[in-house]
Structures are given as structure tokens and as C-alpha cells.
Length: 76
Image (cartoon, rainbow, N blue to C red):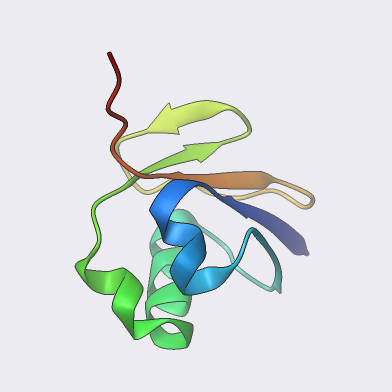
């Protein structure tokens, strides 16, 4: 099962823009994997969206799910 991860804003300085990861079952596992690959990511604040829906709890991922990491936005 392949998961597409799209990264936005300042987080791209750590990870780049997109990642493809395999065998990730849920969002908690995804975050652990990303923190292992990119330790600097662990100290950053961001929200997670799965298939264009912001989530607030661990979510099961399906094959070809798209996960977005969204840093805090500021604007005017």
C-alpha cells in the first residue's frame, strides 16, 4: 500500500515537497516514520489532512491515500 505525502510551507525545508511511503497503516505510524526519517520535523507544529479532510485523531490509511502536512498559516 502506497501513501502519498504532500508537505507545505516551512516544512518543505526539512522534507521536500512530496514523499511516497509504503506499508503505513495509520496516521500515527506515518508520523512516527516521518519523525524517524526527519528528526527536525518532530519539533514542528502542523496539522494532518487525509484525502483533503483535516483530522484530529489517528486515522486508518487506505491504498493511494493522500496525506498533507499543513503548518500554521498566517495571513492578512
